[in-house]
Length: 110
Length: 113
View 1 (cartoon, each protein chain N blue to C red):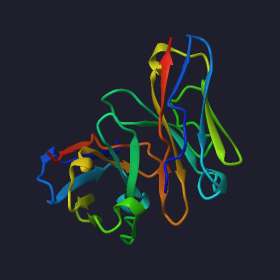
View 2: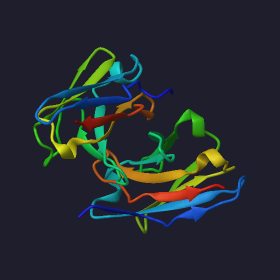
View 3: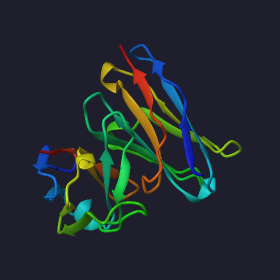
């Protein structure tokens, strides 16, 4: 199972929006509505910010939103803030109790 | 509150095995799967395996099959991950995480010199 494909980096100025893509196949991203997104700050454990493609855990600002079209899921961060600078990973169910992470995207707030 | 507390850092020789524990509390143990995830220095997250505490069924990523064993002790609500035949490339932080990834252990650094 190869890692899902994410752009290595993305950036935006404070207040702007950034969208990160996560491309898989019909056997993972495209086959199930089970895509999560995690945010990881340096030296910290990851934190889930989106689950089941579009849902936000309590406490996660609505500036974070998720979507999916075909084999590609996307995470949009609106109204960028300094604390949004982190690594972001998508995570998808891949059938038969297997899962796969994306390759990760480093978001820089300019 | 939900807590996942992992065992401490390990240094192992190539070819050896390591067994990491993940002690859970604050929820009904059998109701939630447990993932194991690792992160090599400066690298991304890699999914390793999953345990269903209700019955003990496990599944692992193809790249770890034959080398990883996931087990549990229901009396202490502790989950274990054992990785065999360690090599330099297994140097990483290993995490346990609750299904849904909303709760994570603090991570265990395994170093294979």
